[in-house]
Length: 52
Image 1 (cartoon, rainbow, N blue to C red):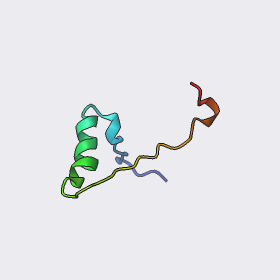
Image 2: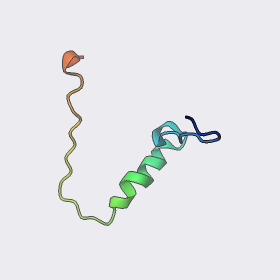
Image 3: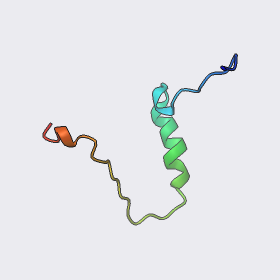
Image 4: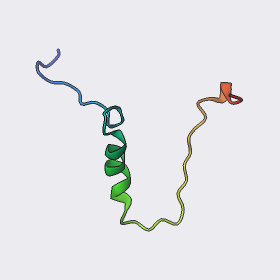
């Protein structure tokens, strides 16, 4: 059963203020921490087309 008058909010990266929204929500809260290293693992979803 669907509730009347309710909707799902858009994803933060899909609105016109996407970059500032992502920064304010995900990067800015980390400002107080002292990092010596940051690692990023993108994943391997394109293993079938890795040459592209």
